[in-house]
Image (cartoon, rainbow, N blue to C red; front, side):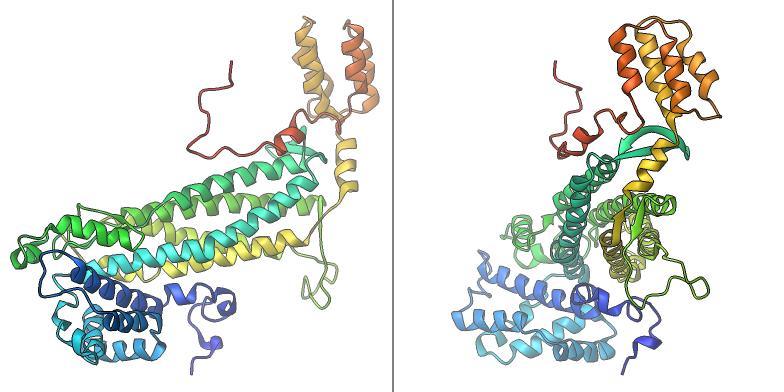
Length: 468
């Protein structure tokens, strides 16, 4: 019996319970189940095709038998396939033999067992099975979790759209913003990557040993095999690739990997920023009874959720990067170096899922420390130097930038010193009064409005500039 404490990978040990949604998809069982699904679907497609009289349309009884076989595919079925594989030393051939055993129990189907895996190479089955795994992981697991992350961030954006916050560029004090607007920046980036992820349709092929329908045509030259293949792949909810070698070249998997990697990079950026804001005291973290922050320092409340998320996104991205660099490369018409790599897809998605869940958990613990945000602004009146020198430029006063640089650079400034400087300027009364009324907390530009501005989908984003 497997014990999580002896697991080689933490995904099947320490974090096993958190990855339950992915296990039916990316496990060996999940791969075998989808191979069976593809093989049965191909047999059905042959029965419905014109000009293949040896496989006439199946009766209702046969259809029900096939439906039940796929719907009730069990762990015992998968174990039977693995037992056959131990003899054949070929995983896809084992699926074929298993199906022949099963269909042999139904008289009508038993007469058609040699059309299981008809004209197929193993990669016809494998590429479609992996494409189904990627689609199912996206639609059933990852998109819903990303949706929860978007909802959690959106709530923070809405709650704090108008809350002033001191910005920092190069780690130094900079023009103020609002907390909600800074989170909205990240939210827009996540939404963009999600839209692109949802727009990607996993790709598949079913065209034989080297992608030319060689065996298909020699057996049934009158059949329009490319048309049949395209219709079959589309029936699985996948995009058809007409131009392949023995393998579907995995460009689609590379694109999906790159999309997840970009999303994870955005989320690493968010984790590091939140980590920094916690360090500055902008956020407190909700306490949980019984939890310990340090084995020796009782006062500690560490930002562990954001650190865990960052680490898991990093591990996932190392794998996603390898997938996108390695999988599209295959020697001549086929080599086997992709096989072992594809079996690690679930590892990358597992670490991504861990990162997402940790990040969502961390967001739920954040409590904004408005007093610290306010105090930080009050201590840095020098950030108004930008506003003052810009207004001076408008009204033609001499050397505005240089005067404010001499007054504030590297030394900070008080409210009194800045107001005295403004009083000395030969500005129109209204402009002077506006500057005198300005505070770091009120110098946030359009930040609050930008926090409420919706994100434009990539396909409709205006890249031509503002309307005239």
